[in-house]
Image (cartoon, rainbow, N blue to C red; front, side, top):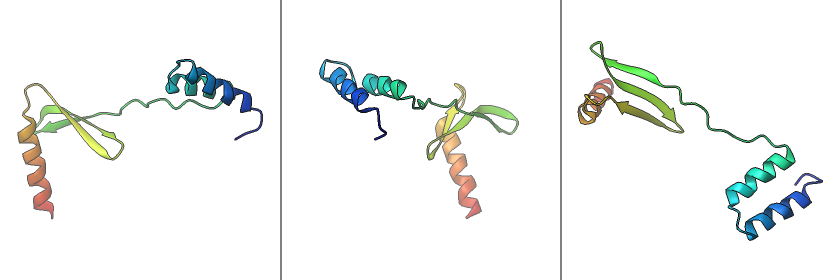
Length: 90
């Protein structure tokens, strides 16, 4: 631990003991210590088309590709087509 933050850590622990959530105490502690607070980055979505028809969009979340289908799209059909596409490539 960096020097000079012992009092802040003790105060954060006291906050938790007095009913604050751990998340709130950690947020406070990071602010007191001048540490950058990690914020969720905006998802970079890409539009998905099949035969020139927009059927949804996709984005990456950690190690997943998330596909969000339009209301008139059938997720089961999209998954079937994805599976067939990759099966042909193997």
